[in-house]
View 1 (cartoon, rainbow, N blue to C red):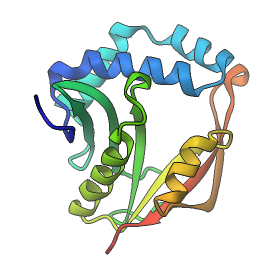
View 2 (view 1 turned 120 degrees about the horizontal axis):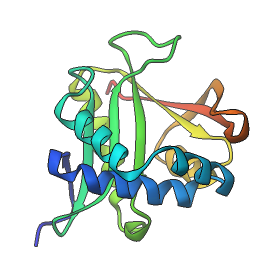
View 3 (view 1 turned 90 degrees about the horizontal axis):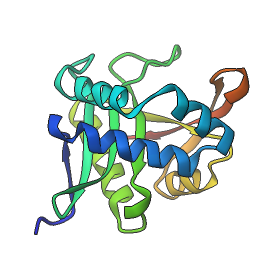
View 4 (view 1 turned 60 degrees about the vertical axis):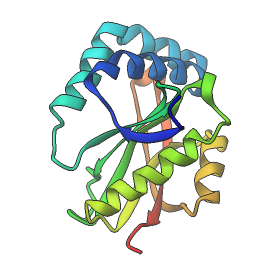
Length: 176
């Protein structure tokens, strides 16, 4: 039995990442948005996308991390340089994706993933991490605020007309 931990994702884990992402969308997104998003992206295409992100990342500092428990992927995070228009290159990083399998929640995987995100970004010499959170995702926002993150005034809307989501940007200093 392998202890719960976080490490870089392996290409063979792409199907698990796609399945976890789909379950997380169903759990976290409003039902009409989840239905629309899931209808647009089939499992095979999502698996291919995850495989490509792992084996051919778009940038050297782009990482796919996985939380593992008993040889099984329990969650994932994607980190890398921030692509926000107001980001300072080489200073600002982004947690672009973050999900713990609904079946594995409340077992410390989210905290381990969050710590691994910060450690990874700090090792890549970033000084600030940012994270876009749905304005209605009180659970995630509380988790991040309790870990030292705070709103920085950034906000945006994403999605199509029928699936618009309002987001607020949180940030934290990782330079220490």
